[in-house]
Length: 107
Length: 127
Image (cartoon, helix red, strand yellow):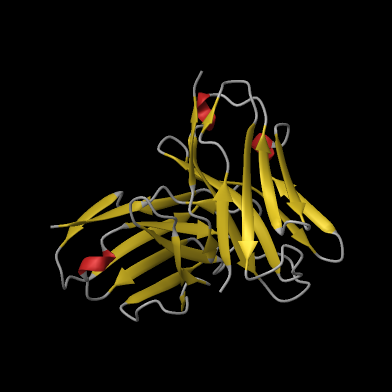
């Protein structure tokens, strides 16, 4: 199975900041990567798929990039509702696997 | 709007069977562009995909290798739902269990992009 490693594990940032989260895969997986946002007590929410395609309804301040083994999620202008834990997930090979998460906290 | 509603007990005794159900509203479990998954999340194991079922002229089911001897996922077309059974549970199986759905082109292989989730069920394993 492909192993997904996110960094950092946690991150403190202020409203209006630009934030970048990194996800690294243990092998080349083209652009078969999704990003999810999870708030406490709720299920993950799909934000981005295909490494860079925003899911319908996701604000344009979110963006994704990368291919191969290295990917990034960027929030360009952090808003209060963006504080959450973010997970990457590969769907290039079976079984699908997730990163360990990056917790984004208020600074 | 498609929604998934989970049901089932939140407390299971060690060595017993965990049974959960996920009811689908707004779509059919037999939709040949959908696939229906079970996923769990725990502090120790993170988010772990457990298995899926989907219909493409016939039913297909796939399981995580680590659970293959203990897990069963079944569709129920009469109730438009699918279920999870996990046998011989141990405290390591304690987690929040989610059902999830993903859509692809009609007749296509599931993409495993989870754009639809149930509300989650907290499962505790204790006597």
